[in-house]
Image (cartoon, one colour):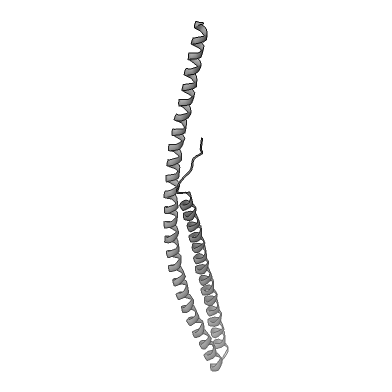
Length: 152
């Protein structure tokens, strides 16, 4: 007797590989979001340090040139933060798209898994019926052989 064979096994394998690839894409997109957020956090920290230095300079005496330089640095940091925030927004959009693609790939593979399980269950039931028929036939032959031996 042949064992169970799912005719769509290669398609199921392809769906599984697609799902794994999309899971990797989700992980990469998630890493991009985290990286952008770390950059933003670093810039915000630098902005706070520059503001503290400006306060210190202003309270220690009139150093207009130094304050202006710090304001220029602060302006650059704010522009960098805006760029980093735009990168984070883009990364979050990519993450959302990657998650949706992963969910679809998961559903497609899951459908094939359920179909395979149903077909395997059906095959197992049919195989059980065949085995039972063979056992019933062997039992009948044995019983008829005993009857012939007893009547002789």
